[in-house]
Length: 260
Image (tube, rainbow, N blue to C red; front, side):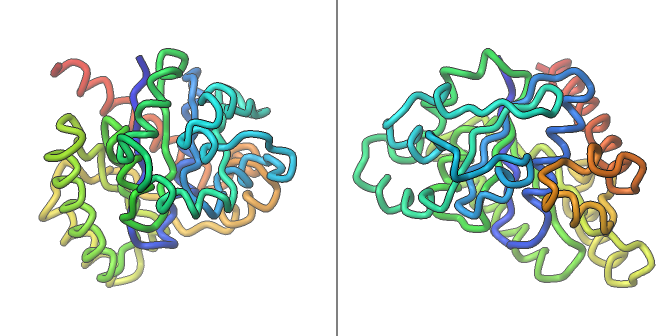
């Protein structure tokens, strides 16, 4: 049965979608079967895989509301090993509509159970909120990967998300753990970068990934071409960083398996 990883941070613009897309692509190249669930109404992950939103029949919105099966919302991509459950702006209303449904915090989990056996990893791109949509993602996942920028406001968001994970662990998902904390848009020469990085490492220790994702123009350009960066510009620093992240991610997963 596949592992489910939610990529989450309530602060926007920290590289959640970029990480979902490029980690998934890097794992796919390494021979893993990956399902990416775009759970953000902005649909940036859907666009970044070159999926034309106007041609989509079923999305994650239809799946969690019970209007289709999850398997009916899965779209194959041209990128090795990667499939996507797309999202459009219709997902924005789901938080309100779910309030009227049974098991409203676990609708995504219930749908993913039907496809978990088909994939090595299911990666969920969460919105920059802590509403019912994100609670569904946290309830459905085995672990949470937290991308952050090295800014002081990111520290506040990290603390708040950690508290939210504790609440979900208590109420809905006792097995949830933090997979790791990933520094994104990393510029080593900035003093602030070093200060924030040291502060995060002091509090979270081994949870912090050794791999850092640099600020890189190719990472910004790739979504407009509908490609992960390793397909758009395989020799750039961003592509190399996500290849390294995938290797470190798999190494962590093997250690976790050996402990259980």
